[in-house]
Structure formats: structure tokens, C-alpha cells
Image 1 (cartoon, rainbow, N blue to C red):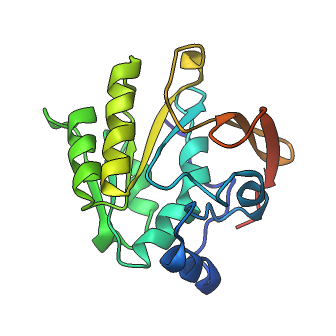
Image 2: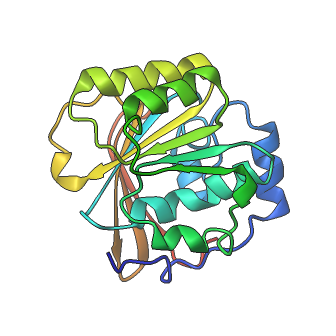
Length: 206
């Protein structure tokens, strides 16, 4: 995959964003003010499951997540990536704001699946888990949701957009893509938000 984060400049998280993460009790600040304003709780659902849909081979969802993940590592909390689709771009995460000592990547291991994600979430030993294993049924997604709630952690599942018609119990479900204005985020469903919504985030927002 040749996709990179070049079109979304990512920097060290601002001191203000790190402080917001340190005191956040409701939503996890996304690092995008327009999105935080739209989402109930002011960010990614705390102790919940967020499902992110993007085009096959795209890194748009990860670009959207990077500010939040970077800020978590700057508050000395662990972030776990399980089965990312490709490794080369991981080498650049430090330049994009991630503190590598708080980043754990599981790749090509027999137990690197939703079960592993559940253990990290349920025990609370990771503040956030990002899973690319693409669970295909609502029962497995429900397990991730329950584990996140038990550990007061944040579960993110990145799936291909062609799975948008599948049933999902996610607290927040978004479709992520790009247009000439920046990153387009379609909120398909969100606990506490009564109708779908969309926001376009300028590429230079963060």
C-alpha cells in the first residue's frame, strides 16, 4: 500500500490537547475542534466502541485518530495497534507525535485478533486499542464494546467501507474519506446524537 499521511500534516500534540486528555472524563478529545463540538461528550466515546469505515487500503481513519492517540501517549498511557494492514508507515509515527515507548504493535501473531483486543481493553492496561481485524459479526463487536466499558478504555475498529451495511452495536459509527476540502467525516450513528451528521475537517486543522 502506498498511502501515507502526507496530505494531513501531523505534529506533536499541543500542550492544550494533552491537558484536555489528562482531565477528560466524558469523551476523549479527538484533536479536531469541529468534530468534538459535533459529538456528544465532546470526543470519542469513553468506555465505548467506535467503528471507523474507510476505503480499502486507505489510511484516512488512522489520520483522523492520530491526534487523539498521540495525546494519549503524551500522558503516558498505552496505545495498542492490532493487525495494522501494513508496517512501513508505522516507522513515521514518532515524527507524527506518537511517543513510541507507549505504543505497542501486534502484527502477524496467532492471537492478534479481537480476543487479544478484549484483554487489553478489559484489564485497562491500554487506554486505546485500534483493531484492523475486521470482526464480521455483531457478537464479536459487542465483546469489544463490553470490554472497553469494563476497562474504561477506548476501542476503535477500522473496517472497509463495503461493510457499512452490516449490523453493528458500535456506540459511534463514522465513515471517513477525503475531498478537496480535507477529511470528510460522516457520522452514521452516535449514541446521544439523534440523526446522521457530517463535518469536513481542514487538512491543516491539527
